[in-house]
Structures are given as structure tokens and as C-alpha cells.
Image (cartoon, rainbow, N blue to C red; front, side, top):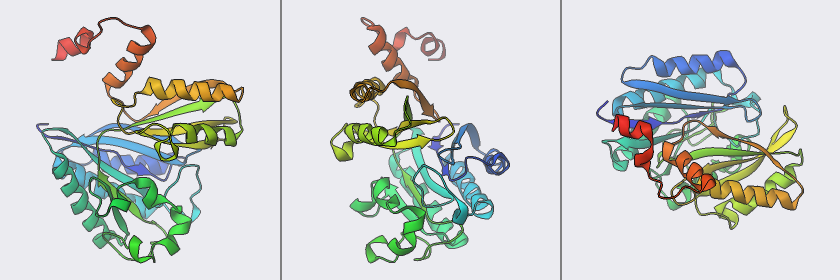
Length: 298
């Protein structure tokens, strides 16, 4: 591919494997697109799908996925730990190679207009595609979630960018935009006390005084009997994984709790993990040129 754009739809279905497979088929059947990864979580009841392609390919694959989700997912019966407002909750486009952020913004707007018009779903644009400062942050748009949006959407300041000005009961609403790469990073704690996870999330997230490039919340993993600090790291170069991880370990120790594991959802740049290795191994004079694969494929 001469031009590469990443698209990472977050779908409000993480339990029904048959439905998840149907959504994946919409992506892999699209010309000019390559499926890279998908990851489902039963507690979150959410699937994160990652694919890349050229402008027309990713736009078409995203539309087909949203259309299929509107047919097979009914938000009136959806329950999960992760905040959401629709069957496909959020669809970001990320510039990777030979494409500008402005082009990704245009893709987001074109897709949003088509979704609103053809699928009758309210559409909000966010991050670099946002039409107002209040809509740049996904948290602001999603506040109130699906259940609260039936009233929120009636407020003049929350009129959708595209589509109807009332909620679609079955499909909800959707957020579409363009952004830089982020890492979905979760840290699991050896306790079932959600208040501890909430307090630690508050300590590390930017909106409550934590790190500038961290969004975080506490989540219950009921199937495992533990809790989690669930995060998005929006700029790993400025707030690296190891710094957030060490802070969570320190905060957890205040409550007599251990970190029992961590996970990355979706894909991660190799540099983000090499930064972690560099930090913990205390490597001297380390550079990316010392990585074998980088030298072979350069």
C-alpha cells in the first residue's frame, strides 16, 4: 500500500462470537483493506477491531461494519463495564503513511455524513475532526452514555453533526473522528474493590490532575474477581507506558494491593515496548538501530 490509514472501530459486542465474526467479515471482504487485529472482552462487552488500507478502502470497510452492527446489535439490551453510546461506539482514523491528518479528517466527515443519512444514526465528530472545542474530547461526548443520551441529544449544544436529532433506540449514536496513535493499556489489581481502582485511575488521568496524555477509569472484571485500571495513552512518547505502570504500582501499594498483570488491547508501536525494555534493563547507549528486525527491514 502506498497510502496507509489505520481505522480502529470499537464495537459494543464482546460476548457473542457469531456476531463478532459477522462484523469481521465485513472488513476482510473489502478491497484495499487488511485486517490486523481484533480483541474482545466479555466484562467490557466490547470488541476493538484494527485494520489498515487506503482512503477509499478504510472508509468503505468502516461503513459496512457500522451498517452490519446496526442490523445485529440492539443497544436496548446491551450491558457492559465500558462507557458507550452506540452499537459502534467510536471510529477513529489514524494517519500512518503518505497521508495527512487533514485527509483523515475529511474521511471522518464523509463517513459521518453517509452514516447519518443512510443509516439514520446520530453522528458526532471528535478529536481533530471536532466541530466545537467541547467535542474534541471523547469523554465529553460520551458522558451520560446510551441511557442518558435520549435526553442529552435534545440539548441545542449536543445537536449531532450529522444524522437525526434524536436517538436511534436500537443503534444509539456514534462518534467518528481522526486522531494520532494511542495505546489501550490496562493494569489489573489483586482486589475486587472497585473504589481502589477508581482512586488509582483518578491519580493517573489528566482530567483529575494526573499525566497529560492519560485517560483512565476503574473497571470491574467480574469473571476474574478483580478490578482494573483501564487506560488510553494518547502520546506514549511524552507519557511512556513504564511511567504510568510504575505510578499505578506505587499507588496500589498504598492500599496494600498488588498489580497482578497488565494487557494491551489492539496493536502497539514497537518503540513503545522498546522504551519499556530500555527503562527496566537500564540499557546504556541504546538506540532503535540496535534492534535486529529494524536493520533487516530498513
